Image 1 (cartoon, rainbow, N blue to C red):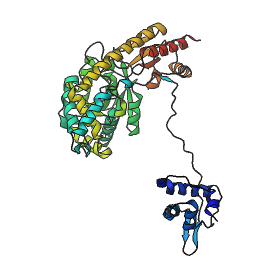
Image 2 (cartoon, helix red, strand yellow):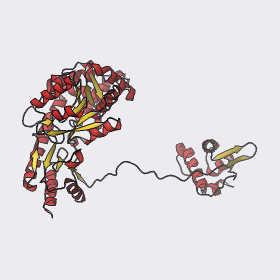
Image 3 (tube, helix red, strand yellow):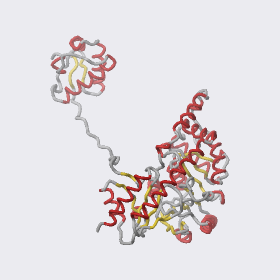
Image 4 (cartoon, rainbow, N blue to C red):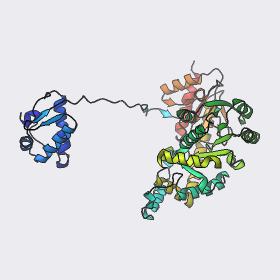
Length: 460
């Protein structure tokens, strides 16, 4: 058969560099459409090249690729024939949840990402690249670059009271990465079960479950984790958010802090301190990190997710000395460590003071949004109570007892608002409520969303 009939094509208007790929795909299409059956002889390379006006090498390479795929067979002395037809293309469906861009999301605890310090970050990266002889792009220690660990050591000491030399800090892929490392090492030591706060962060429970780590819920009240119930749980590891508990917003009281550390000593246990929201306290300075009271009983983890943005995937872990080496080995075995360039850029932001200046700006912005949210709750949600201290980028709003918070969240979705029902964060049923995250939205939009919730509550 001629090339024109074979391909149903009379002219070729394809850039030279793409002609082989184009020709391969056209032959595949001809075979798939059934225009050519198995056993049919295809045009000789020279004849097809002349007819299409291309170099013979283009056709030879296209036939070679199709032969490697098993679609053509070259018979010595008998030309090249069709040996099989390609299967029809499969329409793959993504398993990721479909985006819902029309929903106003007040459920996701992210900061105002529009305020990311782009200029400072670009200057930091440019400085790293221009001042480097290429070593910035080579392998770094699995526990993180020395430059970042050095700056983190200084910053953690002055901001959180965490006294850790650079060689005791492990750079991680956010808090999630730190929890994954701890789950693996503790499992290997036969200490897999972890007590978690109830209500508590669903994401933390999911990552522990992914690593087959059993969890046991322990109640949270107005003073934080109820330690005597922790003691009765049988767990030897407790994951807590003492600076600003999620979602209740309470701060672990001094008495509970002492009781928790006493439990850790008596039980030979470990406290995993997720330093959640510690950077955002609006009414006073935040309490010092729990790690400062008992560094050999507390693993301190934190990240930049609420400071700069979760997409950077940078966090850190300071663990007791008896766990440190195993955690570094686990970090190496995971992926050899975090990308080097973002680590060095962050080190420069810490060294220059740019990160602290950014934090001051964000505290002012987020406090204004929190004040707006609190006023809107008071105006539009009669009978509702805002829980917790003035901190973080979310509010817990407790609702009247007769309200089904899951039903309210579903009705809000129908109105274009995504909000987190408190019941979805509980292991044991309790009072209804919603978690309102205010970091992402300007005050007017936030107030309007809360007004919608108020209108839904007033409906019969």
